[in-house]
Image (tube, rainbow, N blue to C red):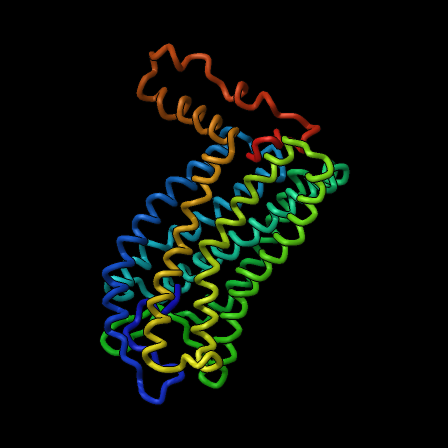
Length: 349
């Protein structure tokens, strides 16, 4: 959570304080309803993905493990939004402990989401380009191991934000924002911005270019329609991620290095703050999108979701409806084969 979107004063890089009551006013009116909508739709969508993967798919492949962890990352990110919504509307009232914890969840969810999208891209690359090796390497055990390592890395990436973010009274209000040591302020501020840009934009873009270059070459040679469909889901997830998070990373970079780009004046800073509000909110809505992608792109996911509703939702309210008798997940999962990397790769999920 960027402190510039929730505080009316920002003292960096100006000889006199740059007062921003209009930025705070817009944030208090715009962000709470948007955060609330993202929370509702994001929580419901990702919870459904989580339940379908656990109840229906039974985590039979490495891809399932990564998709489950991607949903967990989004949920971790989403649970912080009601608190940020209240903070944008008023002030921080939840104390220093929750300030640090929620900042940790926010960053863990963000970095976890990025890393598991990268792992899903690599997973598709191995399945398509190195199919023989992938049959041995793409196991559930290896998926769990790499997921644990990924969460540890996400934790280390989130650590500076957790350490330096704290709640304190500033003027008449309590805030929850980063407070770097004064003698190292610029160093830490620049480091945090560069870390977000490198891990959140440059690294996934680099992996995407390398992996999909190899995938496209392989698909052009084999012209296998099933493999084309297998790539589609992960490719769409990756593209959507960039469309939603790239603007925020760009604005964050410009905001951090204002002096370098000649933007270290009050008017430019206000414009950057407004842009930060818009682009960060756009990025946050990304956590609602993955379930929608699964529903529209993943044919098998739609069947699993339908079966889940029939068994766990509809039957509870209509136990004697004959239309729902005999429906099982076995019918949905009948295309499961060991030879296709432990799932029907033609559907992607």
